[in-house]
Image (cartoon, rainbow over all chains, first blue to last red; front, side, top):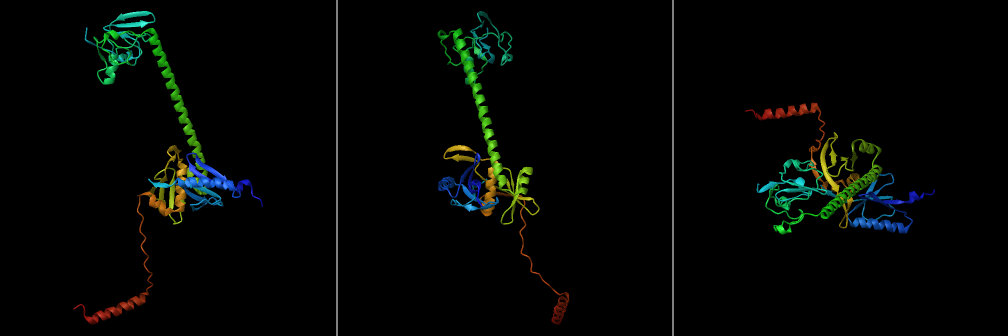
Length: 82
Length: 284
């Protein structure tokens, strides 16, 4: 069974004032992995938290390091008490 | 003649000159006379003695100075020689007095027109920027809503669309209701679906890139961040949150051990206890 290009694409979404910024990478393309990893590292330095999302849309776990095999990652700002 | 006369704001900006009397010029026509300005003429184009079309060349700047210094702006000493137009400082030297020339008046009017056009342009620009910002926010909220929908079950999505909240059960068994909002929008539900607590824990809504303000996080993104954090680590969420208790939860006491007592055995035991007590004659 062959997978489509879209199915091969993994996504990293960062919540921001535009809604969210999406970065996609193909796990078989090192350049794309490096690009996504750079975005991940940048946002982690700003204090963002990273959560994996499973293929069925359910939430995975909190990750501290970029996982190129993760299907979808959502990065959100840290929470503060109000 | 009185030492002072009342002048009106309607004269400021018009072109009139006067000393003890007034001189009005309309084109090439010049008329003179004396009259009292009245308050009714303020901001009105009609005047008791001055036509709106009259080309009245300004006023004693003492009036303007009075305005800016808090003095009575309506009374101007008659014996003060009018100085230049109100933008210039007061000058007591009568020798400096001269009427504004037609050319100067025309230039002043042109300058006023330029200022009016510039103000109009700036208002239009401001309106355009405001509308652009609103459009960006609309698009951002649509994007954020689309992402939120991918994280909800069909029931939760329906709740969100109908009532602008949805309910989620976390690992501990606690159920939370997440209302649409930035702060204080997370509620802990009791068994009867009553909102027992309000939890205020949210991402910072203003987003900065270094020191530069980037924009505001859409409210739907705030809810996504809260949902992710609640599901991942409820304990940390509750530790960070500012919690308002609406209804204290009952403390569950440990259940009593079950006591399976045979009634006959209880009666028999009671009889033996009574015999033993009678033998001891405790009543005496």
